Amino acid sequence: MTTVIEQVAPPRPMPAAALHGWQVAVVRPADAAALHGLFAACSEDTVGRRFFGRLRAFPADYLAHVLAGRAEVHDAVVAYGADRARLVGLASLALPPGSPVAELGVLVGDAWQRQGVGRAMLDLLLARARDRGVLRVSAAVLPGRSALLGALGRHLPAEHLAYSADGPSGVYKLDRT
Image (cartoon, rainbow, N blue to C red):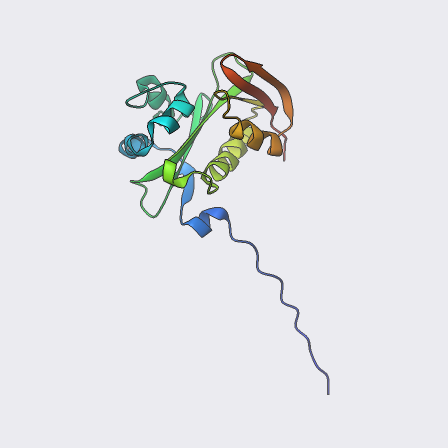
């Protein structure tokens, strides 16, 4: 008698999004109300870290560019749970006219921080940037808040790192993977 031993492949790890019940997608104009809700759900500290100051709402020009849907100028992605009407995060890359470097901004609602939301949004946003031929990404943070730069440095080679009175900043190369 022959015994057959069936080898079963180990289960693939589930993406963080599936584990936490949220999804990541390109922002769309219909997300305007949900973006205002995300902003309102963020603490003053979270908003201050993202926009370097106290704000009561998204800056109008910023929001208009994000919602315009022109990825070559200002690309943006959102993270959400079962209902897209309740966003948990926004990440964007702005490419100022004539600049060779896209500027990164990430906002994650307080309750969703440190759960992989930012990383998942960055994965999609950077993949889209690579597809458009973006070669460099910059990020600036407030003093003592260098977690974003550390995360970028773990996944992208740093081209230039600096520290000024305004805080640390970095320029990172997008690889072609």
